[in-house]
Image (cartoon, rainbow, N blue to C red; front, side):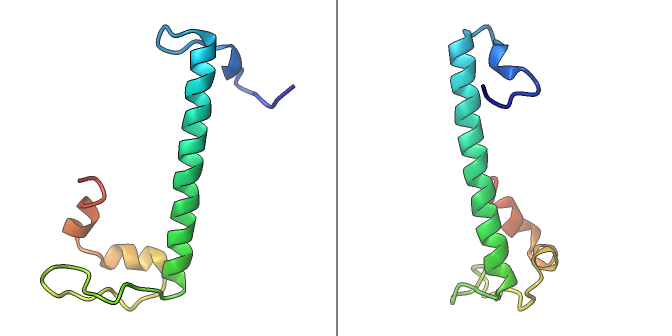
Length: 86
């Protein structure tokens, strides 16, 4: 038996079979878990003041000297933030 409070193991998403739905859910769980682990490592790196030795942007803007990750996010320019999606 396994933990499934939403009973997703019995569901069929997008007209797929139950086996394909379970495969999709397993794949999604692994992917999101890896993203969460990577985000945690990034948070810890910023909190400890670790930075790349080169400028943050092509115009020579250095990385912020703050070590508080939420404050660091606020100091980063919008163009740098949009690179995440581009």
